[in-house]
Length: 300
Image 1 (tube, helix red, strand yellow):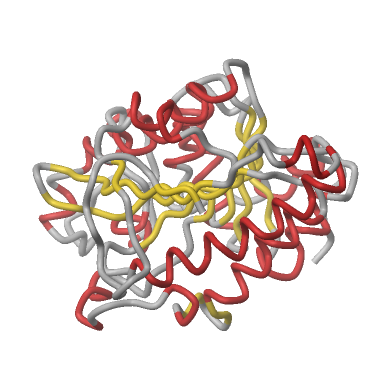
Image 2: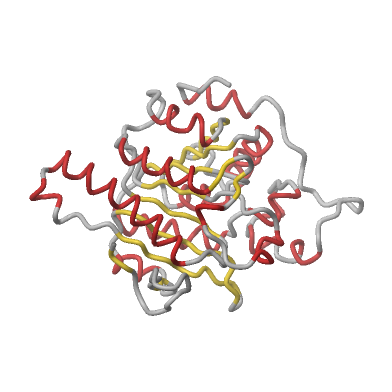
């Protein structure tokens, strides 16, 4: 699979074939509990939003995407650049685009890339959301250094598949052992570290299952933080790099009092600025693999 090098190439990749419409037919088996929440997923659902069966339970709901996008806007105070890995149906990418940020949204499935393009068009932000059809693990880094992208991204978002609606039945989840198709969560952590080492970004947001253990979250954050510190010393020198702190801040994303997933902010984030936007931000400690819920974030 060739990696695109221009915005025109990106458009050609996913505009070849339209995906199936999400217009609901009587023979389509969309569970009622998902169907009833369609306007929570996308407030403009009836204006032409398209979803595959998988995306009904995978897409980031609009309210969550908006909150996470506001966190980035609050940090950088300008229009930025976002790399969205595992773009899905574009829920999170659209949230960033509505804040004025440009988004490269990577998806292996051409059908999902078509979903992203269509759904961004419904919200009037298709000029800011660029789906990229390539494999996250084997081609994302090459795409980032291909000349088709900005030298750096203000943030990298990672929303890997969890294994379907019944993921929670497996009990406590160690992120590094999470199965992402034929890959493991540990390989995703390695990719994050390579993105740091390549100068692509020092900020990451992970969408993780609510049963992810805090020990594994802290372990991921600590590993990425070491790479950020190393790069900062190379860029700024040891004295100035001392002022660069790397955070691990976890927010329970709740809908109607129920935790839907965990938003994990790793890297150069200001915990106060996150707290100003998202009052669900909590501290996770690695002591016993369970959460210790207190306000604000944890500095690694």
